[in-house]
Length: 319
Image (cartoon, rainbow, N blue to C red; front, side, top):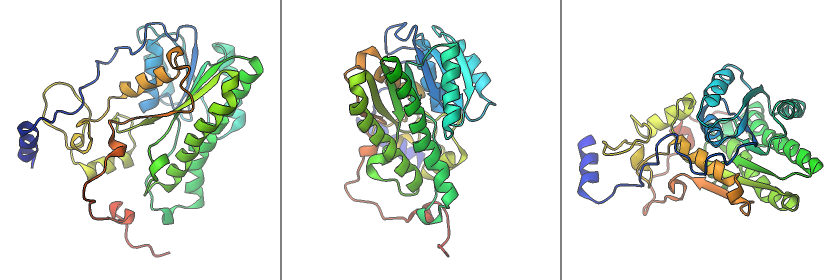
């Protein structure tokens, strides 16, 4: 099988999209965010931390927030040590609780100043057939992904409206907000709501100098991926790994992407720093998909339908 893959790539002109610049490179001028405060929810791990890192490299003062305190301190120290980074604070916050959300903004404002940029990255998700979703499972995902995003966005907007200051919001979304998400009905519904908030609030708050955009990641393997995501990738392409550079044996997961590679987390960070930057002030109400066109991929002949229950290895529904 591997030899067939190697031959297929070697014998034609497919090379995929080039690898990104190295880690540490900046997409914007040094100091773009000097003197600005950036608040990132879910900023202690995974893609949230990767996004926070790119703001830090551009001089931002950071507040990273998470429900769990275990990794926040380590992430705070790591981010503060990056070249160009400003001050970094960490806050434990359950974004489902509007009072705790207000507390985080109070603490951030007292320590660093009113956040100029809010990145709503925190979310919850797990695969499940729709018919198996319990009320608690539905609420757990929707309350964090949609309601929590709204509470953070509302608090940010109200404070800037009261102060008469501009601000920028970036909501992390998902492509199934457009397409639907079989096996992820709870998350897909919530992310569709998040996308709609982008489009609604861009019009409502634009006159007051507040811009809001969405950012949708494709496949960005990282060390903090959950077990169910790892299991899903392994089922889809055994041995799947992360993007590299230069000549290499093709990874099975790469061959499932039109780009012939997966994303590097810093690429998502670069997109976030652009959307919130002075160079994108006329971009608002837009959702940018950063996935190498994978969400638009279609087969000339559709593959055989495999029900979601079978894909997840579940037996017949028995009620």
